[in-house]
Figure 1: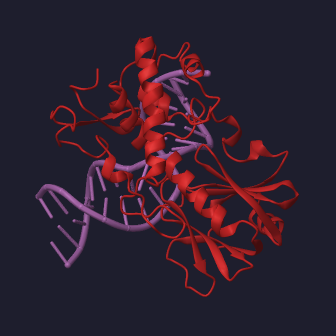
Figure 2: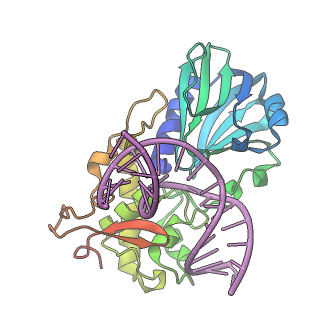
Length: 274
DNA sequence: CGAGGTACCTGACAGC
DNA sequence: TGCTGTCAGGTACCTC
């Protein structure tokens, strides 16, 4: 489900709802989702630990526990985190339950079971998927235009594939790459080394603008909800090309096209994007 | 290293 | 109604 703005929204919700709670128990209904360490060790390590804070890096959710332990969650395609009263029955797709000390559960729902959780200490960042290999945060204040331009040195692949690579830049997924490329007027199959200085600047500005706007609207929800209380985001109403195949471009009226690029369906305006 | 394909899963929807 | 095929917001792993 989620890209950077959705994960950001979820993390903000988690800060309000689980900070200072103690994890009393963990119930794992499908151990495939526990990537590290082994299920029983995971449960043992999480038990009776206090949640100090919740943070985000790329699309990873980082739940900071006392004693420098961290629960890392990646939602992948269909993952959701919800707060439910402990007394409420589980959803069909609830696979991991963190039972808290305030009569609430933090539940990890995951239709397609692609999501993963990790439990690490301060020396185990390399155990949490590709968390320690992520590229820069696009909204980091220190991430300036010149840093963005530097990333493009010697990169020859198409721009869509590059923006989707989490070790190139963190947090962008299929929605926001398509929307950012439209905003910047760049076709998704352009080779990265053909972008001129002006186009790189437009793309840098577009990514910032789109992500900030999506965060403001609490992300994009299609059939799913986004935030921890089950409320929808609203950015889906602001999308200009993503899932607008055969609809008129909001800028020029041309028909929006969809093509498979970098293995993902890519939406673009053949007139506005060059 | 880069690029491209496939695997992992379930459900929704289109077309017959 | 029900079958089949395709598609889905992501990433890991394999091969060339």
